[in-house]
Amino acid sequence: MALVELIMPKMGESIVEATILSWLKTPGDKIELEESILEVATDKVDTEIPSTHAGVLKEILAKNGELVKVGAEIAIIEAEVDETKSASLEIPSTPKVNDSYSITAEAANAPNHTNGSQHLAIDFKTSTKFYSPLVKNIAKEENISVAELETISGTGSEGRVTKNDILSFVEHRKLGTTVKSVSPTKVSTSAQRPLLAPSAFAGDEIIEMDRMRKMIAERMVDSKRIAPHVTSFVEADVSNIVFWRNKVKHDFQKRDGDALTFTPMFVEAIALAIRDYPMINIQVDGDKIIKKKDINIGIAVALPSGNLIVPVIRNADQLNLSGLAKAVNDLVKRARNNKLKPDDLAGGTFTVSNVGTFGNVMGTPIIMQPQVGIIAIGAIQKKPSVVETPYGDAIAIRHKMFLSHSYDHRVVDGALGGSVVRRVADYLEKFDVNRGI
Image (tube, rainbow, N blue to C red; front, side):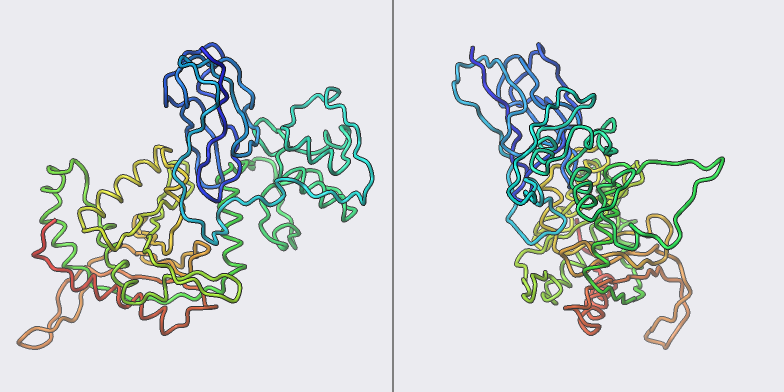
């Protein structure tokens, strides 16, 4: 038997830290190799961490709610195999991209603005609250006393002070202002200083935003600030797709044991359109444009909690329709069961959002940074339409839907943005009703 350290594993190239949500084991519990031992949260997704050794959990070094850097020790395991070196489980990382949705090392080590003054000798034993090692280090660097620290309203688990809480406190202190509570969500200047502050009255219910809602709020505001949004609309006749799906969906269910939705057809059409217009598959890096080689399509998934998450189908243009259907069903199921890994959410180059699921005929979606385009799919409706026949025009009932394409007007003009969504509609309208799956 040997004592080995369990460390916070690497969970993607851009992720440098994670928050401990809960331990699934307690000291003294027997654990198997690769058995899930705790749950952590990154800025992308909540995930479970497996044990790197079989044995007994001897000691927990990182408590619930604590923010821990990748590579830091989080537990001690009495391993069954005699190993003297700690092992780490590395989850496959994705290629590094200029992804503003990824957590960065920003303020991981707070800068010292004390102009050479000595740090306070802070005795945290006098505090009545728990503080993570990172928060303590920032407090020491910024000469924040325990008395000051305890005035900060924490937004972490059980009211604990997070990195963002203390950094916001430092920022306000430098500006000579004070705040009653500090929010880790930097939404916007106007949001922080509203012209008319909201008020709660008797009978109103006050609901705290959960961690994911705060991240969504921050990202959506950032996207509107970064990219001037323009939206183009097209109405498509998708009767062929409706007829084809009705014909094959039962056979697909019997063969694969899963439902055949419209989403795989939409993803296929978008991937083909991106092939035709590769300059929509780009990202902006300062005054440079990065033209992405891979076509990785994100699909927006509504969660039972009411929040939204966008897992990614990698190399979507290289999958046939059956492969796309399996990929979509797998990602949606794992998203709704909180089983996604950080890499499932990384590397997207374009996004599709099916607002028709909720009965909406169209929408103006917000771009997922650092992408430059997102298409919303509206509800499919039966409409009387003029159709061309060998004997002249006629009125017929057709299945129609609206497509809306929001794009970054810094680098995508109306000609490209409009052409892309028109090409998607063309592929949907020309769908081959005789194809197999």
